[in-house]
Image 1: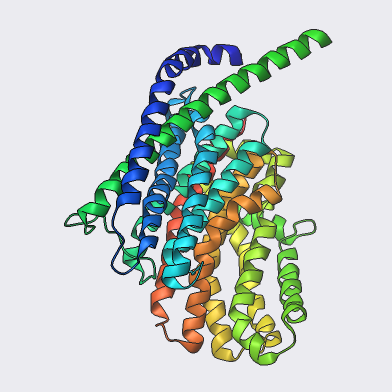
Image 2: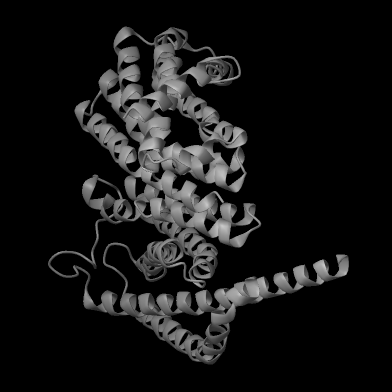
Length: 243
Length: 222
């Protein structure tokens, strides 16, 4: 039965096999360009060289939220359209999103130490991102706790959609509460307040990180599909042996 | 409407009678609060300062403890399948079950707060503030916890998984519950600000919880 379900994924596998090398190459080139530009960017007049943490920290934080958005779309795909690839996409995205969130927290802490004088502060932005990290881990635990992947997919989809409520809270936490974390300076009313010399490397890094996510996500989806195939072959073999 | 009322009455009766286990939550609440002075030392001034936080944490853990009874017992004896198949909308049924659970397991926690406040050297204002915030906040704990309970029953896993899924969702309730109690006791914030956010959290969970729980029961039970 699972083999019939995987009929469509075959086309997905052959398609991604052709796309992935190009994506990986584009990611590598953009990352190199972005890192070079970030290294060449001038020091901030207040923050000095530590401002360069921004070029890693901000894309990670954006991606942390973006991946949850992708998982929410995949959750809709699972619940509404019953798309066979949707739960594969959701499952493959969770560990990647958790990694981005973790890196955003770590780089934020390393940036906070010289700027705020503390690695951690319980303000609204940091707390809501930490909650999202815990929810990523809970989601991964849920995927791992249940054997039947389609059953786990539906449960995880509902939890993902409930967790998506956290996204606007994270985005607007710096506006709603008076926090230590600085307010939005790129995606805001009235255009970015960031200077061009910082904005362009940041945007290049953001695109590079997005491409990195797409590459990793497609590769993880391929692995997941292949893993399921191996598993169903093993099950078939085991049932044939016992029969 | 009569079906829902009957369901609420039945759930409360089951929870309060022998084998129900709703009142175990209160006992657990008492135990957690009694443990705290051993952990932080019997310094009364310190306990006064930590009191609201301890009470909130105890109530949170106690309501988590009784949550997996919400659907599990009905699932074991088969009545959950009848409830899912009945003509009443499942969202309403879930809301009724959560309401019954809150009446049977949540309200006793609030009633126990004044007694436990004495143990933590809280004065009348502080105790009243904590009880009031618990009254406003525990529905949010029950209704968001119901999502986790519904997921756990469809996956045949309770316990730790339920806690891991539900606790992150309850962090905002804890933050604003304790903030409102502290604001009433010592300031400097106005009591109304965190308290109205706490009420908003409860109202939002009142809307989201039944739908998410009903969806997970519908998709998960087969």
